[in-house]
Image (cartoon, rainbow, N blue to C red; front, top):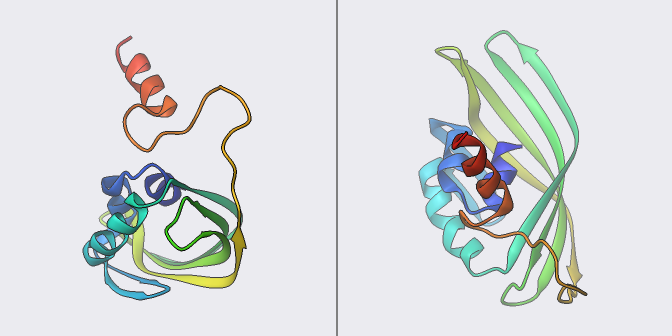
Amino acid sequence: MRYCRGIDRLDFELVRSCYHPDGIDHHTGFDGTVDEYIAWVQPKLELLGGTMHAVGNHLVELYGDVAISETYSTNTHWERPGGDFTSGCRFVDLMERRDGRWAISERWAVREWTRSDTFTHPEATGPRGRRDNSDLLAELRTRLAAR
């Protein structure tokens, strides 16, 4: 869930925190370390109007300090050069507990399907998601931290 929030809000330190420092990621068009992944994905995401990851089924198989995690996700990307799209994927993760901390040691974003989409602008004024510290979630956190 932190990974999806980090991707959708362009919070790459949050994304990085989901992996062990030597973590490996495999996405469509990419294989490499977590730092290489962030360097690869950040400019791609910054070109978009936004993304939204909706997480569904989640299953963990525990083997002591190692686990296999499978998480279904539907991911929407809009205002993308080349066209808007939604894809279904499974995040298949090899997780490890090191020094009491669980994190991803290796991730495979297994693409199951992709469809082209056409998006329109919102039909009326109201709250809108932002991909920086002016997002409502960040504002609420700041407000509560000030208490």
